[in-house]
Length: 359
Image (tube, rainbow, N blue to C red; front, side, top):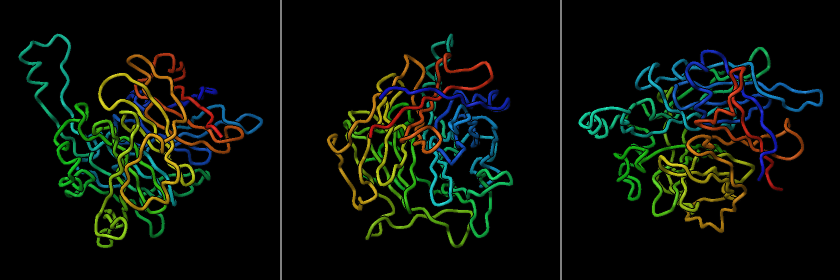
């Protein structure tokens, strides 16, 4: 798959100063708009397409920012980052999920050895990272989609306020529980993708990768009838289990993002740890019909693309299917964390890649 063209995503001054445009981790199309998020804030951004005379997208601007804390309660309050690593859209909702990961402190250049060793032994938990938010989408006065706290009887709601996060759900899991206390950059738990399909939410893990097998978690969140501002989990399948795990042979890579296309699931992959490596797009055909925990072999996950990625930068991090405004046939948009300087524009934007999906 070859990059067909690039389009500029242009952000406002406040987001540029916060570095949102250089830390993009998630993207979803919504008609003429894109919803995007970065991993250094607790906000969601909306950009609107500019069109040429033929109705094709030339770029995205008209940036607006929505603070998660204006819509849902956050366990650590409005000022701590949520490390949003995935966005999903379905059934009139926008979903946002934090990384659910622990951080090991970095060694700073020039530090004395004793201080460097102390920092490297320090592991930090930031509670806002451990949330899953479901936000109502409504038509604004300008006809464009917007996220709101309430739309009729639909209310913004969150999972992860009271010991009920996705990782709390996994505390007794035979495969994943041992990794809950390990920082993400050490092959610990690190959520980096979410997809919504019907009543199911699929959550992709960058790590851990278990002997080469990547992990996908499936859940069914719904409104808590006792507290409409909170989510609860419903059983998945015929039993009482509140989640399923699927193991995917992605060539030793972890999951960087997910995006549904019809009844299939597109999977963006990359290295599980803090190193450079290949980035690819795979398809899991017919996931909508899957109703049991699966072991999915490489032969069942056709590779659609090998994506360009840089040495030390330009990490493909977000994936969206584009329909209708980018020409005939489906296309993908790829956004990047740590974009190369060549992607940054003088107008305060960043260039995203648009690639054509194989027929």
